[in-house]
Structure formats: C-alpha cells, structure tokens
Image (cartoon, rainbow, N blue to C red):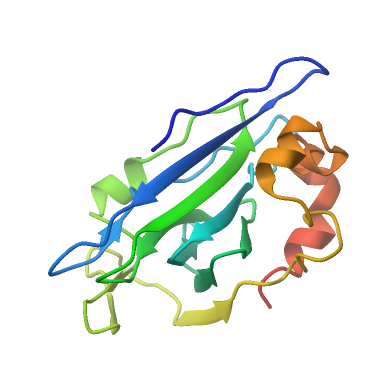
Length: 191
C-alpha cells in the first residue's frame, strides 16, 4: 500500500490511498478483507476504487452474507463498495500486477475482525478461477457476478481520476462522509 494522502483545506474529510498487488504463484494475491462502520446517521461508510493497471476482483458481502457479489474490474474502471458491505480485493492474474487507488472517508477505521475470525470472505477464488464457499460461514447467498462500469468514465460524477477529485475537493466526495443522502444511488449499484 502506498502512503495515504489526506488533503488539507476546504474541510477535507477524505483520504486517498494506492496499492500494488503483485501476481503470486501458485495462488492469487488478496488484500485483507474488512467492513466499515456506520456514520453518525447510521449508514455505513462507502469506499471508491479505481483500477489503474491490471485486473481486480472485488468480493463484496453483507455481514450476514445475504448478498455476496464478485465485481470484475480492469484498468480505468471505478468500483464503489456500497454502505453495509465488507470487501476484499483479489488480483486474479498469475502474470500481471494490480495497481489501484481508493478513496474513503477519514472519519473511521476499518474493522477486520469478521474476516479474520472466518479466515477470509464468504467465498475463496481458486487458482483455476473457480469459487468455493468458505466453510467458516454458516450460510451465504449464491455468489453473483457483475462487471464494473456502473459509472461511465466519460461523463458523470466520477469522470475524473480519483486523485483529481480529491485535489479539486469535488462535491461528489460528500458521498463518502454523508452516505445517508445517497441511498437511492447505492441501492441501484449492483442489481
């Protein structure tokens, strides 16, 4: 992980980070899964990722695993982890490095405990590309598969690279600190 940057001025309350996930043999490289707590209004904090190079699999899940989604993203794609979902990032490539940036509110610390206690997410991705249930979860919904791209890159609120949104204190970043005001947008992210 690169050092996180927290812009100053204009009441900035977000931080942008970057990371490089090397390919690994014989298995995959995966980030440590985590959940975000709720904000003072009771809505979980979201997180926004941008794939800079390579391919990423974002496995997102609700705490009770009633919804488990694998989002496939490639360079230039933006993925939003909605409120109330935990997530883990997987580099599925045996040859390519995954480079990504993420932006999140600076008002909280992530909670890794649920993933640590169960030794990962509700599903594991095998080297073959197959997904198997993690037996440490009592029950989990069937894994749904979606492609990134809910936000067009040529227009819309996330048309600029994440670093530029932070640099310019873009109003769209309010979604990170006041997610309760954007419930409708989150609800329709991954139908």
